[in-house]
Length: 167
Image (cartoon, rainbow, N blue to C red):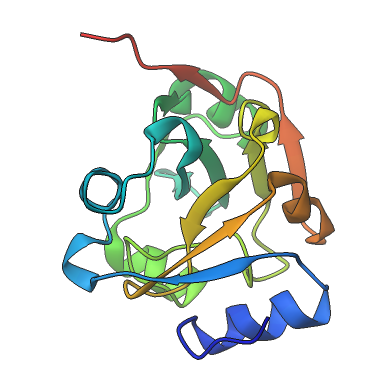
């Protein structure tokens, strides 16, 4: 399926790797996960966020982590250890855009630079379908999560994130 909704690089990668997907339009003002889910009727347990994290000391080292919206990325243990750094933090919006070419609210694991590791929490893989950013704030992707395994830098990681306790 071809769409002009998606970021052009994302569209190119989807086509070149034959990634099964559906492109969805999104009001850019509602691109952040909680607002998107509320407006468009998706559940947090089927919505996935692509989060860029990196070292805060020494030589910069980054990774992109995909976790469900009802989970919290285990930054200080699993991610820090896997990245092999002593201190770690979420990348700021400017760094995220510099590394991915995408704005927060639209970051997707599709079309990341090959030098950026892509770690997918194992819970994501248990879903039938997930909703992800489309590479910009005006689109989303609906796809089976195993389609992300077609990406050359993808790795499923057990325990990358934990469920957020319900209030």
